[in-house]
Length: 189
Length: 189
Image (cartoon, rainbow over all chains, first blue to last red; front, top):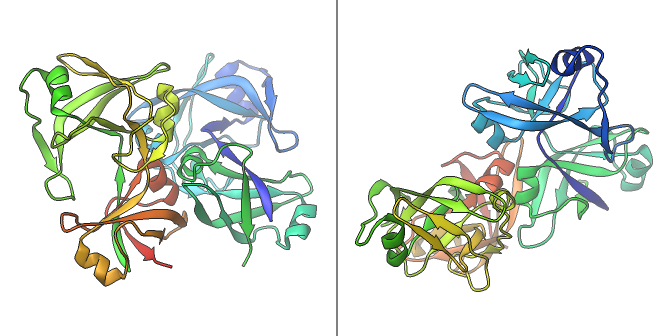
């Protein structure tokens, strides 16, 4: 029941409308490098996040453009910005706080969309069958080493479009002392 | 088996010799506020940490002065500074990296002493008896809520001089979604 873990640094998903404002009308996001999930990629583009208490510069944009803009930060980032971001599943942004995005061509004042992404496992439906788990199931994941932890409340996201990987944020990864690609253990109960 | 948890931000313990260099000969560390452990206090004094890759400004000094200087940072701080700090118990600094400390009166180039403190529980010997655990025992600690985790490899430090409190760093605390003073559960096996 082993799978690789990856640490997600703060990042931004943008709608094409917001790409247009931040980087110029008709701008297309450029591929910097592919991510583990098929079709997803890190972009060359970066934006600054400006909150009531502080600014975080150079936050990487992930592509492709999505229907709506979403900003994923850590709890520490939220304190630094002065933005009280809740722990939410990606896409569940109703009622979340906003932040100002600043790009080279313009600014976007988001009214919502800032979250701390809840930990989750992407897996192909074939992996789900192998592990004996289902899409949306809550499982636990154990890490190893001097900072070993058991993460509870880990959401399984199974799809034919996904590749097997657990996603945590940098604080969760560092708290567990794990590096990108390290193997962790899925515990289904 | 409940006890309070506290998140330790980056901080510095100084020898009196290093206090003299950083803040001026004969300088006495000033009390900013008491900490939970008897006799320990946060100071008004702050220093900058300067590593090969970056600087972290305004890191608080904790008092009283100790026999040797020790810098406690997070793994993220270590990446920012360019200092590969190992996860170690407080005081176990042999072979650890150093960093430059900059104060208002001078600089100290530490040759060792930079660690990421391993999580631990301070408790009075009376608490240890109540919990049925011993000094130096390794236990687990469970947290609650959407980011619930079980921390493994938690060191018990029992002494008549200690007050009951679990200490984790900010990344561990945020990974578990806990705030200062929140109750967690000790699991002795």
